[in-house]
Image (cartoon, rainbow, N blue to C red; front, side, top):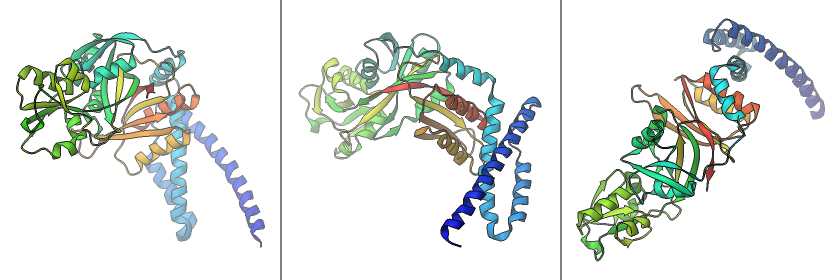
Length: 380
């Protein structure tokens, strides 16, 4: 037989397989409805084992491994579809439907905003990028920002979540899981750290440098060139500058924004001392209520998934099957559990499609925990 004849046979077999697959999925739909009516769970490991055992016996040693791989995929598709059916009309379905069914509003130009630290912080600068006239209230730490938003003291909170040099701000991910807030906007801010000290101070006089740990990490190359200098982490880069200004001590300096030099009458001993010039920090804007504003195309979610082989791969497969673009995946250890993690996903997708709504409901049913943080636009 020639190649074309063999390919024709393959095409005929594929046609039969497609017809059989469609029949199988129709039966899967009936099974999903039965489970929904009888409050049954989707995943039944004993049933899957029995089917795989029969597949192995039927195919024999030559094709057994390939067959099991094929049926694992079929199981994932069946489970995915059943989960979507079970999720219809659930509380979570209705919640997401309510958020996405409201026409997007323009992002406000003026609002009260909570930031960590004090005037001159990078969160202060990010707030001014997000809003034309922010009414900023400064909190002692990141958790203070979450509390201010959750209590209604401020409409928004602005917090750093990721840096292009130092990576993710892990404390923010932990607080996002703890507090019931939504992400409604984000912004990328170019960060240039300056070494600030009292006017007239020389670099060789400095014995202590204060800043936030993220800024210290971002400036590690420069700091490694300094001898006999203590590096001391504090809560905020702007707070470090204010502390230096109030101390009157010429042996102390801070890594802070250049704006802090103007605000606190300090002198830049060195400018742009970060490891790379393309140093950017992503800031998120949180709100106590979920709302989608104009231009929103990025969605953040959190999942705790069962500690079973292949579970994360199946989640990734579902994201891929829906056509969304996964732009970030972050994992954080759950302190009270051994070797178990929360996973944070940032995806790009149209939130007004039925596929997006189905995907969110499906993922909600897949994990032990699921949290939809919001859909928002990122300002660059």
